[in-house]
Length: 344
Image (cartoon, rainbow, N blue to C red):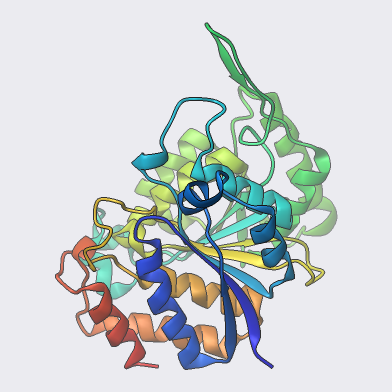
């Protein structure tokens, strides 16, 4: 039976990388795809970044594949104006997706593309586990003429469930990131993570790392990390920093997951943005989109061999010299897609 996937091409280069991703998926399995506008495209069409129809379709699907959202066309500081990113936050909340997984594993073929020396990034294989539906992004927001505030709020239950996700995925160590020397929410975070560790996962090593120290160690000693457990905003920032270990943010996929009941579809998307400056040129790097599709196959649809096939095809294409402009080469989106398809 075919798996039903809702696709959200979104904005900028989104449609340009979504189409080849569907080609890659068709090469490894049977799927039905249902496309919906999202982000800026949905604002233009419907006045809101996420319509009720789109959210309902996502809830009925087996998985949701998103390309990219946003762009200067919709940038505004007007509090009442719709913004593409609001759709992303609402989709995560509407699907109950509280765990964002961002694997970072620099490929040997791209060591030279990284701003760090090969000796620093060789062997790096870490996973950022970011809490996705709490914290300052979802707290009460107040704006007056001469002030503004954003509330950072976390509950014990929210911290417990993301901590369990991190410990389950760890091979040896969880590095829990906080700012417990300053923030009360971080002190609660540290207490709850420590309790979950001692009561449920004592065989996994746990360390607490202040966020500024974590940012430094990601550059100085990235091999030290196995799983980085973070709250929402810290994870947003640190995962983009970690992306550059791979040589390009265009290489980093992500998965957003809910509970383990299997009833809530996951959301899978590349970490990079909509890159409106290169939209329409046919030069966008589709590899992070392909790797996001692989995460969908693995975590969303439980198709491990198909996921591995896609990842191996991407690595094989890079090993053979494929380089898109962001990686210092000249390959077009179409050429990158062909190189991967030839290896499936």
